[in-house]
Image 1 (cartoon, helix red, strand yellow):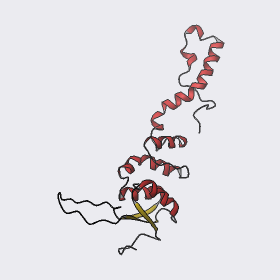
Image 2 (cartoon, rainbow, N blue to C red):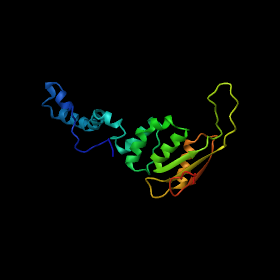
Image 3 (cartoon, one colour):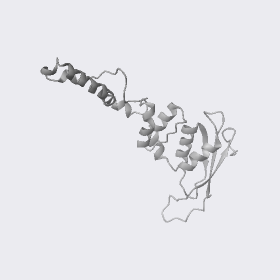
Image 4 (spheres, rainbow, N blue to C red):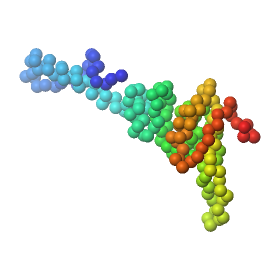
Length: 187
């Protein structure tokens, strides 16, 4: 889609009608301003619909990538249009959870349509009690288990790619692909 030259798009504000009465019957002035109307009509149409351009749920598809970049959202042209819109709408929510188990789980569910379980703290530990003994050293590796949810199967490489982008750089992780959600015994 292009917002440049739209054939036959009328201008809501024709310049020829706004000229002084002296030029109302002047054929050259009317043709000249009609040419300007043709150039300016798409600009006016875009400005008149600006709120729709800023709403990812209704923005033109070719504008969506740019809009996603404004909010730091993930946008991949390979994704279906509705998924791209949803990822842009939820970008701020996903940023709040970035680097957390919940944020990673939500991003995997939204973007790839997989269920996920994140186990481990990535070598981070803390205590609720001030001046308390240090907690025991946590596991240095985060285990991310994924299984098909909205999709028929899991693309392990795309999962690793997304996890690599969303996990803190110092975090070691391992991805396991399961046939279904893990049972109570963790398998």
